[in-house]
Amino acid sequence: MKAITLKAPGGLDRLVPTDLADPGEPGPGEIRVTLHGSSLNFHDYLVCTGQMPAADGRIPMADGAGTVEAVGPGVSEFAPGDQVVSCFFPDWQDGSATIGNFSRVPGDGIDGFAQGTVVLPANSFTHAPKGYDPVEAATITTAGLTAWRALVTEGGLKAGDSVLVLGTGGVSIWALQIARAMGATVIATSSSDAKLERLRELGAACTLNYRTNPDWGRSVRDWTGGRGVDHVIEVGGPGTLAQSLDAVRVGGHISLIGVLTGLGGEVPTGVLMAKQAKLQGIIVGSRREQQDFVRALDTTGIRPLIDRRFELEALADAFRHEESGRHFGKIGVQW
Image (cartoon, rainbow, N blue to C red; front, side, top):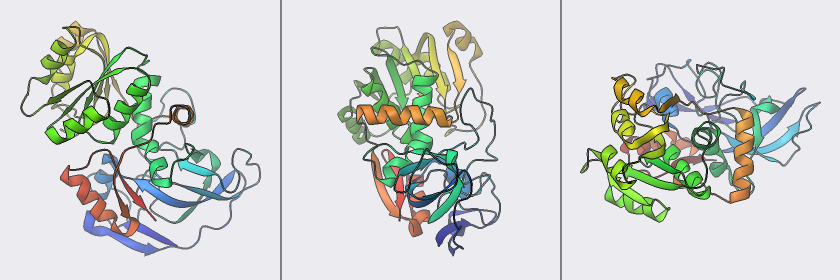
């Protein structure tokens, strides 16, 4: 069985095609899944480049989607032929967050989905959205569910709300699509005028180039008539948080999702207090939330935006494409 493994201490040139033994038949409570697709996330990039060290020989990739081949005794939720997609936190089934590390995350603390077939507990998967191919389905595990939890589960998004999304990565594009489908107004930023045009085509009502307009937080507030936005999808971290605080309304919600500008920095506590805003860290979500998200996708018909697809053997090239920053939406791998 083909797979990609990562040699310690990491690095894209240390992603190695590997032949693994077949995992066998499923036992009680397990399913056997033939995998056909995954998608790239910044977390996967950090692991594969050695910035988040993983065990020698780790199989990377947190997202995986494919077809159920067989089910073990006691499994009733799935049947052979079902299309399924993995869960980022396989041990977080429901309820509020209780996990604060990546020790059981596929592709990091345990083996991930850059391989042909897996045998895992059935509750490590959910049904895939109807009509999605494996690469499309794999985009919901990390990026899609993060956006859903930020806006809907934690943010309480409703029709008529305003949402600010930063950049054109997977979480931000998913957030734009979810917000538009639920009747919200979206404001989006990018450093590329060409990408801003594509954001407008996807339904963004206002777009701002943050390189030519470094005071974009005030511009967002001005565009909303001085009120500010209800929700901010904050993927930048310390380098963008001050502007996001300027952009959010009094009592608004900022979902701190990414650390693209660094792991630490100054928090404008005075502004945060004055805005009485809720600043909440978000790391993906539970299996139950993923099931809710899948039902929403089946109802709304939203389809993920796939920038480009690579073959599994070209996984390093896929990450180099991510490194370039040229992508718009999700990058997929298929086999």
